[in-house]
Length: 216
Image (cartoon, rainbow, N blue to C red):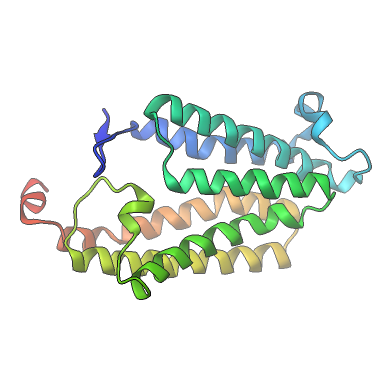
């Protein structure tokens, strides 16, 4: 079943949305762990002088870029629009992935989560404190309704949380191995984000319009 967003578009079924969001990440993890499965297909994208230690992460980066582009195309084909978060994240994935492969340096792909999360955190908190406007429903394409106080509180929490994710990414990639960072990016960041989102349920219910609370 699809759901309509505040802009009137029908949202994707949850399973389809999850597949489009997690599919590229899962392929990123698999390609890093088993690059030989992918190198025959993405060989032309890889640096010719890369060291053996970088075959995994560079293969994963190339696969991640292609899978992200494919997910964006599929998303547009299904919805006839591109949500802001996947679009911005996709542009940065392709940009930083290309720099990783072109410059033969995995630093750029490791910085991608830091840049994306810092960007969204800055947009949310900047919109709230500089322009006095909660931008969370614009970025998330929200499928629920809240009063103004609720949007402000939720926007502030997500803005801070994005900066926390950026800090966590910096700590992990700077202190752990590349393989550990890849695993944490896929199987650590996602559960942390889901747990945080679920923790906001009480606030969402508290600030939902009366008719929404009645439905609940």
